[in-house]
Length: 356
Image 1 (spheres, one colour):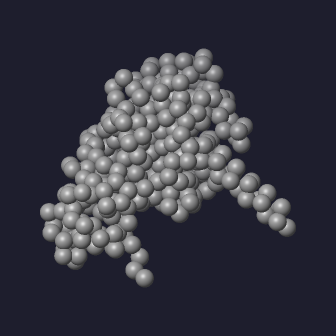
Image 2 (cartoon, rainbow, N blue to C red):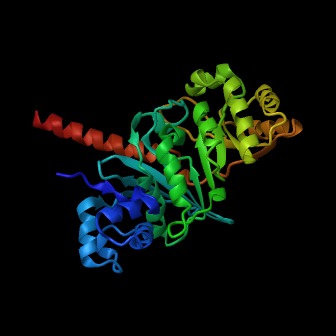
Image 3 (cartoon, one colour):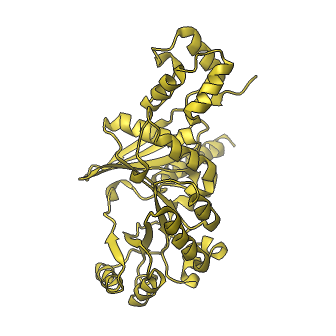
C-alpha cells in the first residue's frame, strides 16, 4: 500500500509537478494551495476542483489537521492551545493580543533536547520534529478558532527551530507565500539557543526574519550551567556568528535574557553583558522567568530587574522587558503539554496496575 504524502508541506511548484503525474491541470495548484491555508480538512471541501480530481488527490495525499484537546483563555486575552497531532504527540501554541496586532507563538518540535534547566519544554525530551505543514496548522487553526488574523509570528514555543532546520526553513518560505497565509518575513522572529553552524547557514538564506538568540548569561561558566548547548558552542563562537549574521543580513539581532534570582541578575552580570555586546547593533529583551515546579530557580526581584536595566543602559545597550502574558494559563513553553502528558501517563499506569 502506497503511503500518502503530506500535501500541506509542499510549495506550489512542487504541487504543480505532483499534479502533472496525476493528469490534473497545473493551474489547480494555486487553488489547492489556497484551500489548504484556509484550513480545509478534506479534499471534498475544495468545491472548485472536480470530484474526479478530488478523488485522485485523496488517493495520493493527506491533509494534516490537529485535534484541539485543551484551550485556555487568559484574562489578558491571550489563548493557549494544546494540539494533538495525528501520531498522538502534543504541541502548544499561544495567541497573544497586542495594541499593534495579534501575535502567535508556535512550536517547531514535539519536545526539545536542548536541556536548558529553566525551561519546561525540555523536561520530557524530544519526541520528534514537526513538518512544515504541522507548523502552518498552528497558525491556520488558531485563526479559525479566534476568527482573527495572525499579524506576527514568533518561533519560540516548544523545540529548537534550528535543530529542525530543513523543515523550519521550508515553513518560513511557505508561510510568506502569496495565495497562502502571506505573512511578511519581517513580522517573523525565530528564537535559537545558539546552534552556531545553523546560524551561519541561516545567514546565507536571504530571509527577512528577526533572529532572537537565547543568551541568559554573559560568560561561559554560568551559561553552560543554564544551557548545555554552550558546552558545544561557547560565547567565543556564538557572538562572532551573531556579528557576522548582522553584517550579512542587515537584520538587528535580539538577545533574550531570562532574569533568574541570584544567578544572572547581578550588577556584575549586567556589566559583563554590556561588554560582551558592545558595538553590536543588538537589542536585549529581558524575560521575567516563569517558575517551573521541577526547578529551584526563581524569577528576579523587581529591584534587581530595574538595576540590571540601568547598568545596561549606561553601557549603551538597547534593552526592554518582555510583557508577561498568560500567567494564569500556564503560557510558558511546555507547561501545559507536560501536565497533560503526565496526567495521561498516570492514567495509563493506573489502568495497567488495575489489570495486573
